[in-house]
Length: 81
Ligand code: SF4
Ligand code: SF4
Image (cartoon, rainbow, N blue to C red; front, top):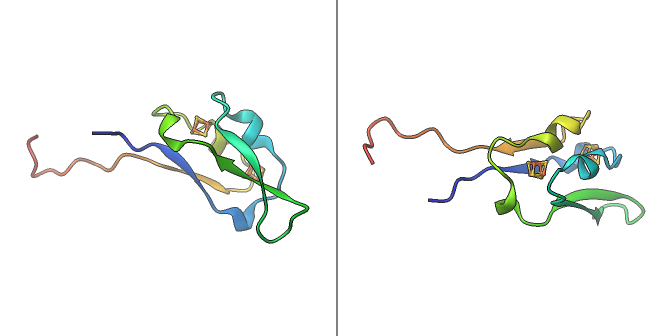
C-alpha cells in the first residue's frame, strides 16, 4: 500500500516569497501563476508521490502557515493486517 505523505497549500495566505520552492531538497516545487493575479506566483508540486516520508522542509520554510503535510492515517486498532 502506498504511504501518503505530501504537502497541501492554503494558497489564499501565500505571500509569494518563493522560499518553499528553494527549500525543497528534491526540487518538487515550482512557480505557478496565481489564479487571482497573473502578476504573482504560487507554489505547486510536480508529483506528490515523490515526497519522502518525514520530509517537511517546505512547510518549515513558510513563515505564513501556508503549507501543511498530509500524513499517513493512524492504523485502525481493530485491524490485524
Ligand atoms: S515535503 Fe519535502 S520533498 Fe515534498 S515538496 Fe515539501 S520539501 Fe519537497
Ligand atoms: S514560503 Fe509560503 S508564502 Fe512563500 S511562496 Fe511558499 S507558500 Fe507562499
